[in-house]
Amino acid sequence: MTDWDMELVHVESAALDALGAANSLETIDAAAAESVGKRSVLAAMQRSLRDVDPDERRRRGALLQASRTRIAQAVATRRGELLAAHRRDQLASDALDLGDVITSARPWALTAGHGGLIPAVQAELEDVFVAMGFTVAEGPEVETDWYNFEALNIPPAHPARGLWDTFYVELGDPETIVLRTHTSPTQVHLMEQAVATGTLPIHSVMPGRCYRRDTPDARHLAVFHQVEGLVVDQNITFADLAGVIETFTRAFFGPDIRSRLRPGYFPFTEPSAEFEITCTICRGAGCRTCSQTGWIELGGCGMMDPAVFDAVGIDPERWSGFAFGFGIDRCAQMRAGIADLRALTENDVRFLEQF
Ligand code: DAH
Image (cartoon, rainbow, N blue to C red):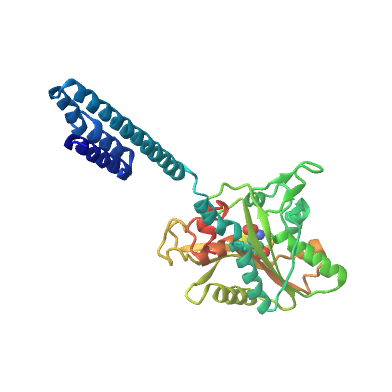
């Protein structure tokens, strides 16, 4: 072997080492250029053939060509490997990471649901009244005009009907079947039953869903909940009513929330009052939720109107009583500090999860 031959062996093995060490498509291309490109040692050796005699030039030319072929093969092999690896990486990074999907899906699929805020508040309200000696009753959500209005001293075409924007059900004669606009008709059912079974007195609360053709806003929903209260007994006075309202407010909202009764009008009670509590959103300072008044109206109350006793056959000379009705959703809103009641119907999990 001549020195030239030795150099060729050395150059080829250095090139093959460099190609083998290339670990990316960029480095293999650079290594290939370095070993066989115009400025490579191999190219210089090729050029040097000009200076040797023809036989030796032919011999060296063949050796150089064989060397170039082996290097080219090594480039192709390594390039193929790197390309395959590159494609694998790309596929892996483009792939939907099922691991992530499954992990993030797991809480959704496996976390047990929980009751909503309104049923929880309703249960708590019932507890407060049960502790005060009331029983709990329920009535139908679809009512006849008589239960929802007439028996409550609101005859057909009475202007007070304007207080309740009513959804009518297409059943029977027009505007005779309604979605109840309040829980007050359940009072009527309860009094009828008590009269029929001879089980007066009554001390009951009646929670349930109500419907009004109202445009929802921060304090109103078209489908909402009320709890009705009814006491029919002997020698019942307005002081008993005020005491029940005050006791309820303290028990449910805590001692820092004040309640007040303001003169009001309802056809089924006389006298009537509106029942308000301090707005818990602004603590009485005035805000959007309470229309800057500092007070939130929860509902109404009053002494049973003798006309209602007449409608159900209770003797107003012997019995007296009071009734009240207020919004469960409002109570929930004031307890949980929800500025806008519509959040309850939007099904945003970030909101619902808080209760
Ligand atoms: N039913 C009334 C309403 O929906 C609230 C109410 C007022 C209920 C006075 C009563 C009552 O029982 O005595 O606005």
